Image (cartoon, each protein chain N blue to C red):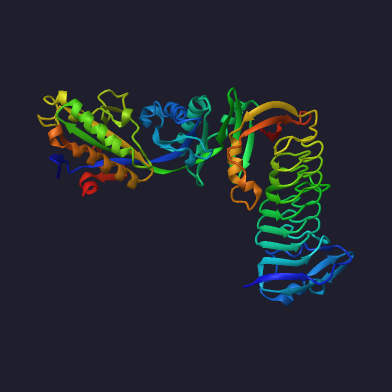
Length: 272
Length: 298
């Protein structure tokens, strides 16, 4: 079976909520059934077939073409299957996702991977603010899985993140890992202001020394940490710069904190 | 059956079901990994007195260990998963955690698990940190030379303990030489350990004793100095008997190791004083695994 392909006909005037279009919940094989799915479009509810051309049969492999930043909640809550997005995606990409993979050939909006439990999201572009973070009202952000961003991430990346890994090949904005509960965020580019602000546990791993580090993250000096070898090995299967990092780079400067909030987190900056 | 002039008794070794686990100890080099592994496998010759039978399975090159450092693979055998877990925690806590630069990882993976670092982490007094990498959880415990890295748990499996054979020779030195050759060959077999000192035991035992407090005592039928006063199994030309006990992850591993060891001992031949090969059993009533020497060597 060929992948079920949804091609957006025209740029929409309002935001479209695609949370109902989950690979694991789509009716199999008949495009007319898919066309009858109801979507929230602005303040209206419309049939999917009014906005998208539909081809292919395999709902486990969903392709969205001609996508744009107004398509929200793609892959939200999905448990299995693969989603491939050509173009940008909107907010809440993969929110609460439990499994499967999402690949975006473009940028993603805010709250990408928010509340994600498992699976893999690969954004071949930039993502907005609050990647892997908790949406207002949620106690925790990302709780597992992997968010890989080839470009840059916005502010508050990993805010209240609980578990999992956020890997950013480019730059990260301000307050990266703020209020982080646990998990791993690695950034190969520059990092904005106040990384690790109010973090409780977890690891921030940076290629470059941040411009500013909160006063409540204390410098513990340079150390060779063996667990980094395991962490770097775990990147080896990614289609990313992270898989090509030297696995013997175990020497880091360690900042422990945030001492105002438990202080069991750490900000590591590769030495040399 | 006679191999190279050595008579092979038509008997069998009787072995028992046990539980086994494997851990990988790594360090900055093999010297320090071996220090830790030897310490944790010390006083682990017999479950009866030591609680666990343990030994070094193999030396691992850096590319075969989880953290890319030189390592040692250690196998431990106990009578139950619970016993095994208790002993593993004690031994890792006292012998690996304490060794400079060491780390320890699970060497088996499966559904049945026992604690490795789950409780040892509390040595960190609140400064310990966990890291979930993939499906596995590791503990990082701050110590005076850096961090002790320890996987949270390791799996265990059903296994076989107590495979054995006896080398009967014309003198003690010739019995020892034959056993050394056998052990060298058996150490090349994966998934097995020979838990006694140097892999060899000279105090083979029988069940029970005239003293009611003792569960085991000498096997006088194989003690050469008692040849004239017991129902001996030794002919006049045999002056020394040594035993090799082997524990394996499966019965086929034990069988392979026994075959390698007996063949190596027999390769020295009767001219080197190796007279007979026999095996220890309890009449076949106690252990569920029987390793018949003639079948193994056929």
